[in-house]
Image 1: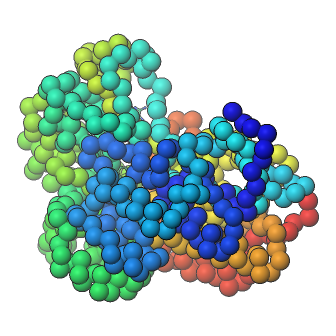
Image 2: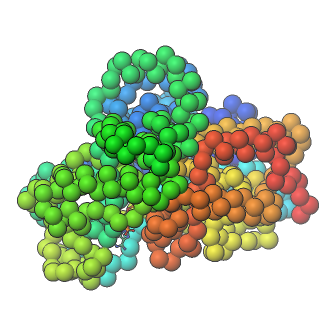
Image 3: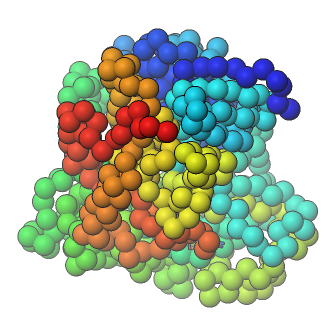
Length: 533
Ligand code: N01
């Protein structure tokens, strides 16, 4: 219910995940009256919603954490190399309390619409409860936050326990003695399947496309490693962000094409054992050269063959596209799980799910199940914005403007949408980087930009259409030099039929960082200030 009193702020942030809470702190320190509007009843964003069994970060926690406060990064101790979801949520709660942020977060207020009022150059936001007016509007809504719920025939008739990994209930779910179906084999499924398989009497995994996955070899935090990194934390962070994907890589420079194959295989084995996602960054040409990519892909394909005892199942689990074309996964015992007698893999590319009934799924045959888990991913990168009714100049709707594919300048600003910023928006490294430093980079940039506007008496900022067009051409030119564009993935909207097919992440953290700095050095080149209405 909307009440009649419009509440006014200098800035409104949408989303209380890692991006939103840091943005709140920064704008508050700048002296702006700022609040966060958050749909959930608590902070956490992705780490609040994705509570499925086995959910954990696949970037080491010493890297996947804030660096803006030296005391915070020194004092917080992670218990494992790759922290599990509850510990990450505890960390976000700790940060929220440590910096006293909660009082400015309005929970359970889903933003329904955001309209730019040209006369006053202000944003009017409506939530399920209130109406707000704000000079700046910052969308910290995440890249993977709107669930993709495919329209399976008869899904609404299912009477068993229907779950989705991306909106997992807060109450513990057990599957002891149950027949369970999981649809999807992306990261969320790959993390949860080994745990569900330990409880369920029968587990049916419905796979459309197999994925590459690297063992996490997770374990308790190595105290020596922690001490070493904490002893040179800022240097460590800087080094990592100079790598193409912004995470610690093993050997960013070496090329498979120029290295003896025995040496390559020995190095890939070492990376398989220790590197997790870094397996992909282990050689620079894996992302660039199809033959080199094939060497790394074949290494993983052989591992699957060696691990999975049944050759038919092993073949079904083996991807035939470029490694990294779909987001690489990191697992704990995923392929081994298919050696269990109670775990069954169903090829729904060959035999699609025809129908879902009260207590069963029909594909190549009928599978009776107690629980159905959708691990079917997200309306990635754009969904969190296009699912809100956002209109800018002349009432232009963002959804319409992006119908043929999302466009943004630097992943930060959108033409026709003044004083609106996106944190890790389309066209920035975002999902092809370590999200934490990328979030901090964007939040710092947005805050500095607003401060610059205040100091230079500018009231309204927006990207120019030409800067935005040129930027997206660059994003695609870079992507076309890599192996990323010829695989169907959520990077290019191919996971959802009706979505525009456009490749959205900017590949290359160091180049991006340099360009971002140049834009600032040239007084925010590509942005227009105080355009006449
Ligand atoms: O989603 P996904 P996710 N019929 O899109 C299938 C991050 N993440 O939630 O490949 C049948 O990867 C779909 O099949 P296909 C990470 O960036 C991080 O698992 O489209 N199947 C696919 O198998 C990750 O990449 C972490 O053919 C359908 C699956 O569902 C991203 O989130 C953990 C279908 C979806 O896989 C998304 O991962 C988890 C349909 N109609 C996630 N529609 C960590 O940090 C979709 N599928 C650890």
